[in-house]
Image (cartoon, rainbow, N blue to C red; front, top):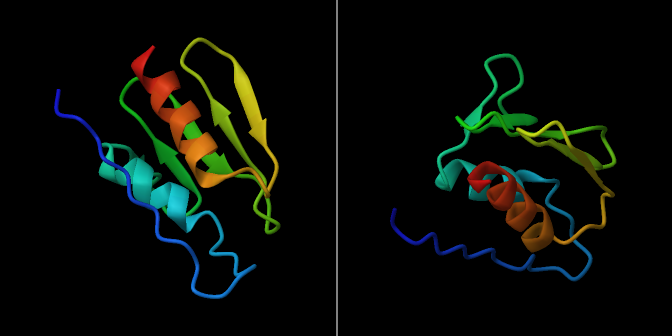
Length: 91
C-alpha cells in the first residue's frame, strides 16, 4: 500500500473556517467515498468506517468498524480527525 501524504492548506484569513470540507477531501484522497444521499456530509470506507458531519456548526463523528463511536467538536483539528479516521479504517 502506498504512503498517504496529506497536505492541508491553512485558511488565508486567520479564523476562517472551511467547514469540514478539508476532512472530506483528505478522506476521499485516501479511498473513502461520499454517501449517495449526502456526499458532502458523509463518507464511507470499505472497512465499514463512516465519518459524518453532525450539524451546521461542524461537529462530526466517526463510526468505527468495531462499533466504537468517536465524537469530534467543531474545533477539533483536521489532522486529528483524519488520523482517527485512517486508524479506524486500518484496524
